[in-house]
Amino acid sequence: MAKLSQIARALKKPKFASRLVRRCFRCGRRRGFLRQFGLCRICFRELANKGEVPGVKKSSW
Image (cartoon, rainbow, N blue to C red):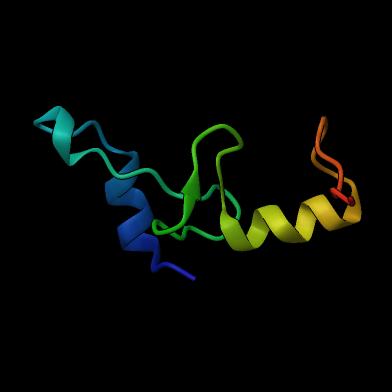
């Protein structure tokens, strides 16, 4: 879980575009972030297994 100060800093518009930090909106994690869903890999897996992410289903072959 990210500190509130880190989350607040990430929400501000950066001085340079390369300083943009994308964070999971659920837990605030910045590493392992999936842009398409706006979630980190851990939160994505939890929600996908519950069936709460639209358009995603568990693969089997």
